[in-house]
Amino acid sequence: MTLTPDQQQIIERIGVFFETKGNQPILGRIIGLLMVVDDAEATFEDIQNCLFVSKSAVSQALTLLQSQNKVEYITKPGERKRYFRLKIRNWKVDIHDDLRKVFKFNEIIEEIISLRGNKNEEFNSYLKEVSKFMQFMEAELPKLIEKYQKQIE
Image (cartoon, rainbow, N blue to C red):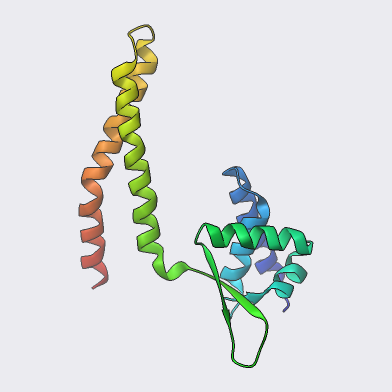
């Protein structure tokens, strides 16, 4: 498997993006690779060779991506190799689950607001603003999803 310079560049950009979000760049680079290759899948060896990383780095990253439900593998009849691919088919469910966790965290923020004293009103007002925004998003999101569904039908 050979990558073009443009493919290599975008894979690196995705790695940097993941790093800015507090993740290991290798996670983003693997996701980027699986997004840009024509087959949308790659063997362990393909990943290692295309990204110029060690076996242990690939193994650890794939284990983490699989535990996060972002990557899966398939096998092909007559072959022993595993082909890794993104689990992008469930993107709507993934986004919904992520947002549900954010909205659930807002319950904790509301509890914190009720426990805080009045010593730092500026900080308290920021917490209240975050909570109000989360409540707004939770109320508006179903409308946005419905609007999107109508648009793609």
